[in-house]
Length: 331
Image 1: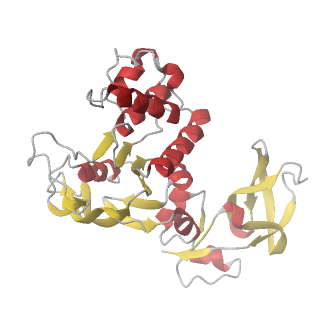
Image 2: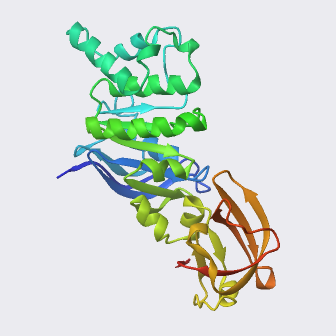
Image 3: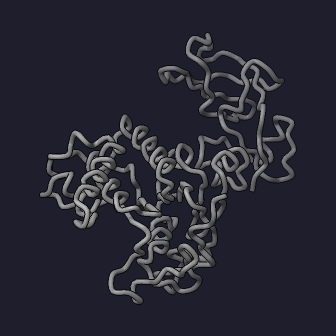
């Protein structure tokens, strides 16, 4: 059974005394080997929380405990940051004139040269950069530099890896590969990963646990599947998926009583060809292996992002019956 490796208790860090900025009263636990994604809109406090975990900030209140010992702040130690963790920032902190191999190997002691070489090569192979071993950092793309930075952070038996926007410089084709590599490495090595991302898809793809931030507060936390299927807030639904949101009056036109709250559903929960609600297809967008429909119903009510397989035969201005097969009532 995995034990708690990190415990965050009621931490607050405000940058400005006159207005809310930073993070406020945040608590959660992380168990060994978990991949945790901190997601939220720009300015929600994601990066501040990551820095607080690592010990780069002096907290106003609360504490962070790593392996049951308090993480010291920057005013309590000579070199800020915790030795049991490694953080990879968006600037990568690489020696740009050194070779890939030397950047990674520099994290290991020279007391056992054979072991140092074996660990370096193994980590390069893990991240599919062994073929770049002799290249200088200046010769690499942003995505390749990202992989080197992660390899450098992991090679010295790191117990927790902190990643700030790890996929920001990786193109769409390589993003899924790097996500899969991170997940595999976490499984193989048992390292705990905490990442910050502006893209909720990173969390849904990778994480065992999501921490949803809004205005410096932890709004909701839990397994990605649970949060996606049962969002407690409109913010959660809109952040995690292309959610359609209806107010109480709009929901009533479909015969659904929300008791004054909002009705929320994702496009894939909508069934075309069944139900009693008639809609007009206002537009059809070709997306490759599927088509996306814009539907309009009574009183101009619109459903966006409804997906059908290519070749379904539906055309613009067609009339269709629609049934919301599943929905949630949310604040």
